[in-house]
Amino acid sequence: MKVEFELVAVENPEELNLIFGMSHFIKTVEDIHEAIVQTNPGMRFGIAFCEASGPRLIRVSGNDDRLQDLAALNAGRIGAGHTFIVFIDNGFPVNILNTIKMVPEVCRIFCATANPLQVIVAANGDGQRGVMGVLDGYSPMGRETDADRAQRIGFLRTIGYKLGE
Image 1 (cartoon, rainbow, N blue to C red):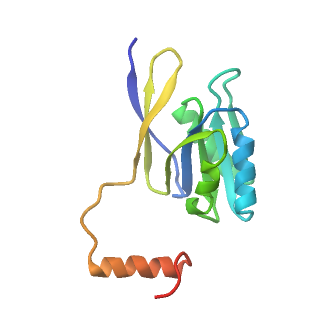
Image 2 (cartoon, one colour; image 1 turned 120 degrees about the vertical axis):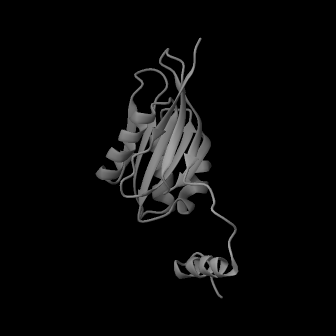
Image 3 (cartoon, rainbow, N blue to C red; image 1 turned 90 degrees about the vertical axis):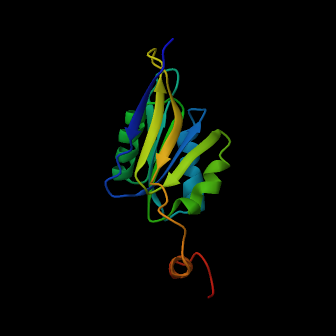
């Protein structure tokens, strides 16, 4: 049997934050939906999950039609069974990531990012596709300086993620 690799660029024209992972059961969409709402009720989101057997549908949920459509579009492009993608607005992955990791059927989180993202997909020509990994953002251009460190620290305090000086 032959395996071919494909690089699938995730469409994210607004540079929204997203979480991309792998799960194993049809109730993933509902459980992730409930986890997000219980953790951060004000967050806008859309989830898409690719079934790997049975009717093999892209299951969709969320509280924002635009984000649900974006999640479904990208789930279809990636086309790997048991994967899910969550697009979020009015929040950050750090607000919900541990909660999603604790959903019983979630097996793996590949990334949480707003960077340009490409998914490395393997296909065997027999209708099976799997995720080999992701390319998230770009390579570093150097080590941070004292000024860079001060900017990072200031930014985290400005957005409320750290307190004090």
